[in-house]
Image 1 (tube, helix red, strand yellow):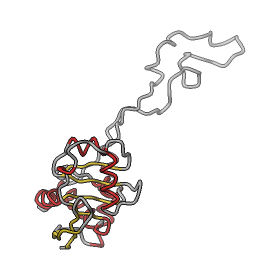
Image 2 (cartoon, helix red, strand yellow; image 1 turned 60 degrees about the vertical axis):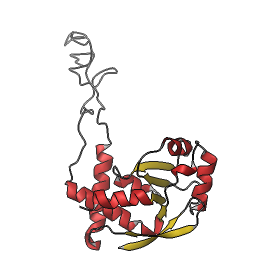
Image 3 (cartoon, helix red, strand yellow; image 1 turned 120 degrees about the horizontal axis):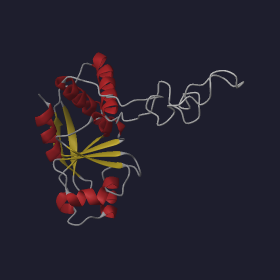
Length: 210
């Protein structure tokens, strides 16, 4: 249980909220987080690389020259892997890289990831009304007021995705917008700063604390 300061749109302290998440034991946390990150990256792989074997390459059904008497090496097909344009030996084939992890473990890993980033956590009041129109300049200025250094990677967690916030942050390659009910561990650990609205924090504790 940790008390976190809450900032408003101007960057001023306006209160405190309590972050209460059940995290993994210290001796197990690194292993758990590693497994969760490896699973996330593995599941993101398409696994659709495909090369043709000598049986799948078009052509090569006829023996290119007779077996003996030509002075050349024996050859049975122009699609041999030894030939240019031939098949591939032990090349990649479509496969499923996905890894399994229990639901309780995944949620514990997410809670542990958030708990491990307390020093980089910034809680802000809901600021959607402050952006009646998409304004990247105003959004960038707000990040600075909240204590985010220029071009540092930011994970912005909202209760619901707002169109004006999305359009304001769309051109900022270092800002990733996430919904409170669909977090992923990679973005939480990859970000330099994690900004959570107070409403999203309530949702996180409601969804993942089971």
